[in-house]
Image 1: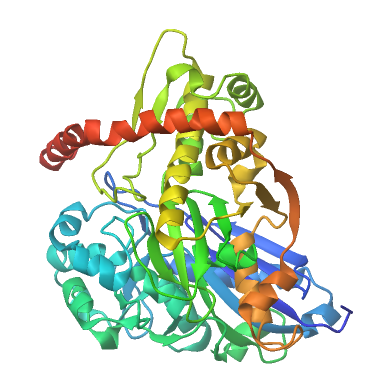
Image 2 (image 1 turned 180 degrees about the vertical axis):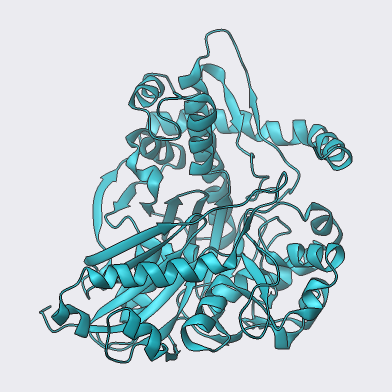
Length: 509
C-alpha cells in the first residue's frame, strides 16, 4: 500500500464518549480524537443522554482527527462510517431537535413492561430475549408514562439514525443498527408492525434502512468544509458497536468469537442462517444479511471500575490499582471461597431477568479487598464460560479461538481469568478502538482497494493482532467446579430479588 491509497473516517459514539479515527487500508490508525460527554442517572436504574452530545462530539472529534493529518493525506479521505451504542434511542422533531433525553441501553426502568410484553413469541420474532436492553420495552414505558412524547415525534431513531440526519439531512439508519431497538422481524431484517404497535410508534417515524456497507448519501459539504476537506465524502451505513467489534477483530467465521471486555462484556459469533435461543441474543450482523449470535453481561468492566471507585484506593479513584491487581493475582482460583453473582445491572445471558441484582456470597474473615475484586473478575469469566457452552450447544459449532478487545484486555490478570474460565485461547487485538475499526472496515469496503465490497474480506485485510493467552487446563477444571456453585446462586436468590424489586417499587428513594 502506498501514499495514494484511500483513507477513511470512522466514528464510535459510545456510552461515555465519541471517538474518531482515520484509517488506511492496512488498518493503521493515522489520526484520532476523543471527547467525553456526560451520562445522566436521574433515578435508580434510569440512564440518559442529551442527544445533542452525540452530534456535537461527533462533529468535534472528526474535525480534530482531520486536523492531525497533512494536507495530502486529507485529500485521500474517501468515505466515512459510524458505529454506536446499541439500543439507545431518542424522539426528534422534523428539524432534529430532541423531544426528551435519549434513553440508553443500560437503562432498567422498563421492568414492568418487560414482564407484560416479553413473550416467547417476541423472542422468536425479534431474536432478542425479554431484557432491559432492547428499546422496545423502554419505548412502551415512554408510551405509558409520557404519553404526549411519541405521538408528537417526527422520528424515533437510534444514535446512528440521528447522526446520519445531522450529516446528510436524511433519516436513514443501518439494518445492523436499527435492529438493536428490538422492533424487527429479524428473519426479514425489517420492522414488524406488531412490535411497532407495542412500542407506540409508527413505521413512518422510523429510519429508512440501508445494509451495512451501502452508501447512504454524501455528507453535507458545509460540514466537510468545516472539517478542513474540500471534496465529496460519502457516508457508508455502519453497524452497532458489538457487531463492529466483531468485524474489527475479523471474527467473521463461525468458529471465531469476539470478546469485548468493555463497560459490558460482549461476545459473539457470526452465521448466515437465522437462529435464536435463550443462551444468546440474535442481531443483524455487520456482514450484510448475516446474523450475530451474542452473549452479554452488562456488568462487565463497569463492575471492576465500580469496585475500584467505591471500595478501592481513594487516591486512585476508578483508575487501575497495581497493588490491588497484585493481591488478586496471588489468590487461588475461587478467591478463597468467595463467589459473586455479577448482576449489578440486571442479568442478560442466560436468565434475561430485569430485576436480578448482584450478590457476593461466602464471606469469611480471611477475605480482603483483593479477594472480592478477584471474585468479581472470576464471576464475569464464569458467566462467559456458561454462555459459550450454551451457544456451542445451540449452534453446533465449537469455538476454537477468541479475539479480545476493550479496556479489560490491559489487565493480564483478567485476560488469564477469562482464558482459563472459557478454556479457549484469547488473542488480543492491537487496535484499542476496535468498534471504530469495524466501522472503518465498512467505509473502506466501498473504495475497492481490496477488491469487491465484501466486509468480511476487508475485515481480514485490516485486522491486526497482538499476543495470545493460552488457557491453563488445571484452572479450567477448577473453574468448572466454581461455575457449578455460581449457577446455584441465581435460583437461590430469585425470590429475594423479587422482594427487593417490589420494595424499591414502593419506596424508590
